[in-house]
Amino acid sequence: METRTSAALFARAQRLIPGGVNSPVRAFGSVGGTPRFIARARGARLWDADGNEYLDAVGSWGPMILGHAHPRVLAAVEAALQGGTSFGAPTEREVRLAERVLERYPGCERVRFVNSGTEATMSALRVARGATGRDVIVKFAGNYHGHADALLVAAGSGAMTTGVPSSAGVPKSTAETTLVARYNDLPSVRALFEARPRDIAAVILEPVVGNMGVVVPTPEFLAGLRALTREYGALLIVDEVMTGFRLARGGAVERFGLDADLVCWGKVIGGGLPVGAYGGPAHLMDHVSPLGKVYQAGTLSGNPLAMAAGIATLEVIDETPDLYEVLEARTAQLEQGLRRAAQDAGVPVTLNRVGSMLTVFFTDEPVVDFESASRTDTAAFGRWFHHLLARGVYWPASAFEAAFLSYAHTEADIQAMVAAAREAFFALAEH
Ligand code: PMP
Picture 1: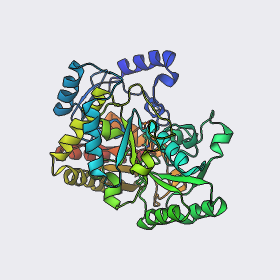
Picture 2 (picture 1 turned 45 degrees about the vertical axis):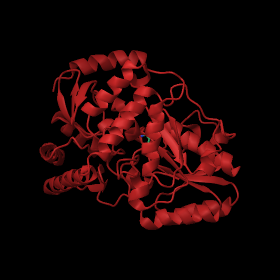
Picture 3 (picture 1 turned 60 degrees about the vertical axis):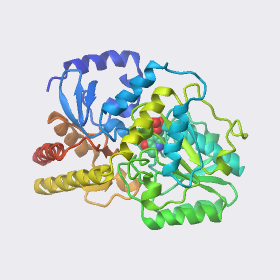
Picture 4 (picture 1 turned 180 degrees about the horizontal axis):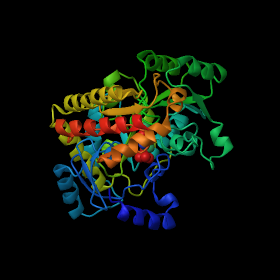
């Protein structure tokens, strides 16, 4: 596969941008090789700067649930564009997107739009702290909630991939307000509450983890978190940045019947443009400025192009009654195909999947938390990844990320992915 143009761009980029990328996992650091510079995308396909075509299993890490360059999303953005790109004043589109979001989450009465998932979780934490008057938060090892200081402790995603789950540059005093529990391990949460019964403002979690690879919560874990937070007067913050609008119309909250205090969104909510949001009941969200004393703002928040892309995406979801069924069926088809291919090649793997999120872990044990994810064979993953890439499948370049499918992936696309993956497993088994 010709990669000369990507390689030249990467060399130029590395002289200008740290690591040549604007988000770490894009640099292929843990898998090696030349990151592909993407020139364009449509439906389930990407084309790189050298003209190579790929079937995309990354979906921009989640937003592209309808596939790339969906005509309705493009038309909505183009229409918004003609009216001007930013006013710093309220617009009708913000109201329309708020209606579409809140209607899906009956527990939420108010939503505030921001520009990224990071801002969403950072702001939700501030609301939790402001509303409870407490400073400490509990998060789970291997969960990633963006790069706000308080949340870059034992973080998943790129932080885990690069082997530094806790970032340099986070003040010790901030990190000390973040307590880390074990995913799917209620006693580890209870122990923290027992040690600090009146200090914990909130527990924040990924309701299905995507950021140490896909890890599925047990129903007892989810129910227990709700009971524990209630018992100790702490809030439960559900980070739906990956899962919102993806696992169901109303995300993981709907799919698992969760009772969240605050919910954070990102990715799908902006249809590929920069949008995040956080929401909850009025009595909590009314702490947010200008009504309350929790300050949060944004020059570009509610940006007309971003709102237009989000509205169009949610509209198309609503007009596509079989969307979640098709996503489920296609991703199940991929899961089964991958499992069979790995078995035939004699490569031990654990496949974790919920809806259209899936991870192939190179291990023969179940993956249920950070420790078990960390014990998987990342070198084998890296080789498999490159065998796939060479065969035209663009898989997430990290052993600790989720693959995301879109409604644009056809049965034939999945067959082609599975065929490539089968060859990749056999190639792996030979070396
Ligand atoms: N929360 C979760 C669960 C995420 O997966 C991510 C990003 N992958 C974030 C928060 C941060 O979102 P962003 O990258 O838009 O800041």
